[in-house]
Image 1 (cartoon, rainbow, N blue to C red):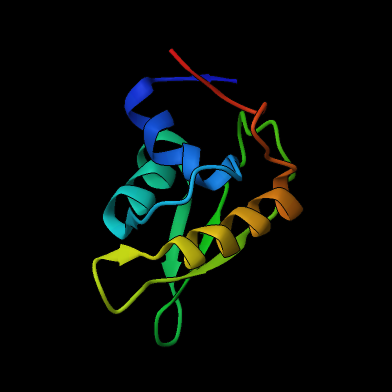
Image 2: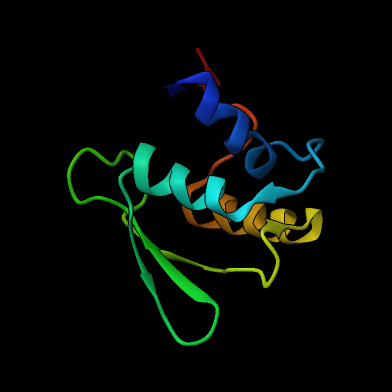
Length: 100
């Protein structure tokens, strides 16, 4: 699936195992709300439920949970954990997206 480079740059650490870096929570959150059009609901504490749109979503129609860090960035370990979740829920991997 093609996507604008600015969004692909944010998404890459979440799909490519060799991309070990921190990601700003606001960038991660904005990617799913603005590009993928997810509905995001805050739960108890730091948990957020990310629900994909009902129309036009080509992956599994499942929501996933992510924990907002206390600091402004997700650490490389947190990014890795979210990468595993996205792989399990949507099957995302290094070949799922390209930046154009």
